[in-house]
Length: 308
Ligand SMILES: [Zn+2]
Image (tube, rainbow, N blue to C red; front, side, top):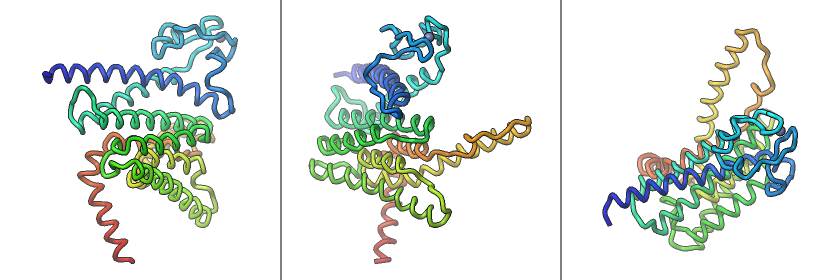
């Protein structure tokens, strides 16, 4: 097999994954819109919220559907928000990034083997749950159990079935160990949020993090294992900080223009930052672990040993 054939195959897989991501993104829009109200995500078919006209088959096509409709309802002309198509694009790009990150780590190979396929499946699954949870938290300030419970079960199940699919050092050859690594991840994620929630209540007399964040961390831990879950938790505030600075700049600009503050300026959901940190770790883990995290955990365990 020539290298050209291999890279061409990877190029095609990348295009396929981008398209699959866009389809999942389209479904994710429906989930974010309906799940907080306990509505079914399968029935009824997508329709215009104003005139209730159902979308035609080709309108449901990711990205192209929106372009074909020129961003408005065919019957009543209601604008279709660009965030729907953005979600499809972002999900497509994220699926593609997972593929690129794995092939950069493992090298191009074709046909794709178990490890590559397993990692790809776990990666795109985690990405899907993270994006839905993030958008839901952003829109409604909640992350429903109808997202996080299936997410945790999926992470635990896939981790037990394909223990080789998690990146180092969470990789294993035994199904049982794969399951335990995921379970330890769920517990670590839950434990960290609950600990800081109690701490926040004692120190600041307010809830710093919701239980939705705890279950979201559970999903991240189930997929990535406990070491990556711990890193995610401590990395998330940095993503929050950069967003907070951006918000502050916007707030000052609006004040200068004589505008009023809105509630949205004060509320800061934590879920999106957890998701961003988890995505960052998922995509950069092979480099992050080798160059940085391995030392961190070594010194951490040395400190623990000194204490005990
Ligand atoms: Zn309409």
